Image (cartoon, rainbow, N blue to C red):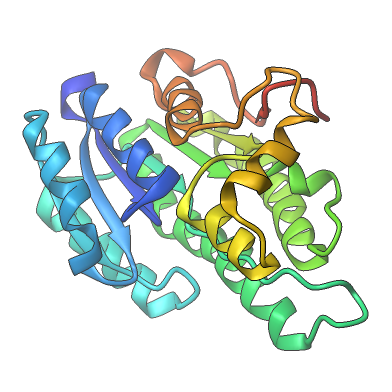
Length: 252
């Protein structure tokens, strides 16, 4: 397995952190399956990867749906080859306090953020075991430590950490590592949408959040992509089951 022949699958890769991760992995020598709900939203990411001289394919997948995940992974492998890297980035938010949170608010966040990662990991593990090499990187969040109004999201992300550590134990002897990148506040369309729902400007929201970040600035998608790049690298084979908080200061 050489760096130039690796194939990476990145979920939620149409924009934001997922797109930055897909492009970073292309710079690292990966061909990339750009996975999101609709292929037409992935066009920009695919074009930027191809401009870097790597192969890319847009793959429609609903990570919460078992059949869609299986079909998406098979389509990616048919187009690019067996996956050596999986990055589970797809995620949704439904912020409400516990008293106001509906069962649907709870369930949809679990389905996308936790069930989706489980289904994707399960779908690629047999290929990675057969190849004797694999890198699984799951995107959690500092919300796993607790976040006001995000009981659903915090629970899903904390569960994702437990899932990852267990995968690291089960697949380690097959040459597969599993690690977590846990971002803090990052400037993305998702966090901008949070500001809209709160009825404040994104600029005001950023200024408020930055007051509590030791680094004195918000995170950028590239900050997260660089952390994923480390875990996805062939040289990181002795690092597994770890959580890296990328939050501009100490966490955990």
